[in-house]
Image 1 (cartoon, rainbow, N blue to C red):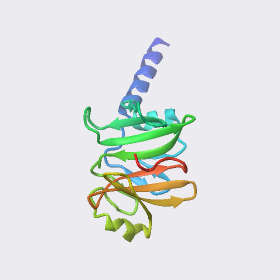
Image 2: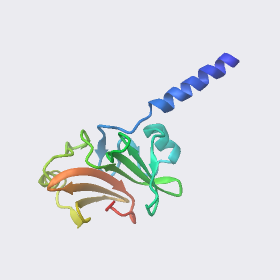
Image 3: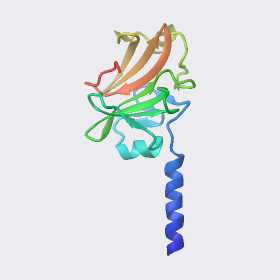
Image 4: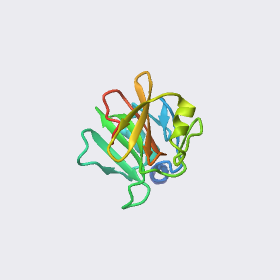
Length: 162
């Protein structure tokens, strides 16, 4: 029995230690970002992306930031309402990310409309965002200096400017 508990604890530790945010993730507009969907619970986010996150102190909603390296802002984030994900987004232009249609971080911003058609545009200060609605989900394409900077998914009522 004792051996079984030790093996079980080791497997649990290994599974949680192996979870990490995707470094070359895929965004399926209106559906998934980095393997997670809106509505994911905190436990589901921890299982998929691990426990190496920081909590935003100044955010309006409870938000976790998963930085790839300590002290560098690149990575992914998730905001929660009532314990469920209401926004999933990339942080600071993480290389290797792309959409299911092949739009990549670093691509010219003009490629967004070429792949997804006319979108709504909004200025967010030092960057802009183009948005696409799919039912109750907004897909955000973040742009800096006319290049794709990142991606996001959110529920209605969530700010797309981060």
